[in-house]
Amino acid sequence: MTQTIYDIPVQSIDGSPTTLAQFKGKVLLVVNVASKCGLTPQYEGLEKLYKDWHAKGLQILGFPANNFKGQEPGSDAEIASFCSLTYDVTFPMFSKISVVGADQHPLYHALTIAQPHATGDGPFRERLEGYGMTPNTAPEVLWNFEKFLVDAEGEVVGRFAPDVAADDPRLLAAVEAELAKAH
Image 1 (cartoon, rainbow, N blue to C red):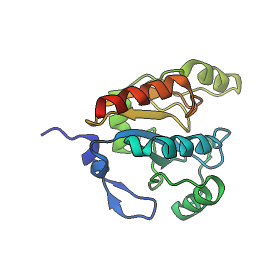
Image 2: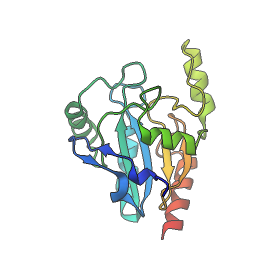
Image 3: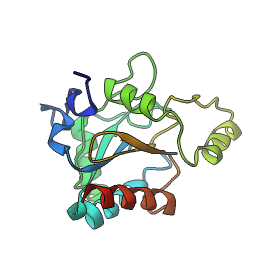
């Protein structure tokens, strides 16, 4: 039997071992997050999207990662506190993982292989280059707040660049389409 994203071991932010199996049948938006990034205010939009669409079957899953310029230095407890106190995050958060490189978490390996290219990736890639950075090449995650859309069957059906915010029409249309299929 082929392993699905539902079988990959992860840890909730409190350190409890779990998998994504509890979210089978839901449309998932998997996001690598960071507390000290220029994009960190996206937590607000993600939380609004979660509150607006959770009852319709959308689950947002946050995976803190410290892969980009040390923008997520905190412990899981510090990250949980920051998310709760600063952005009133109520969607599920998980333990800090690596989303790129030799120590890339198996979940992110599966996501990036399934969906190697991100919608809207050009402008942010150019911005990183403008700062004198060499951006990761596909299929690697480009930066914090990259978003993977997973349908209710567990298939990765979309990927969105870090600066494609939660209220971006391209993201909303994709989420709506998957929610419509799921019901």
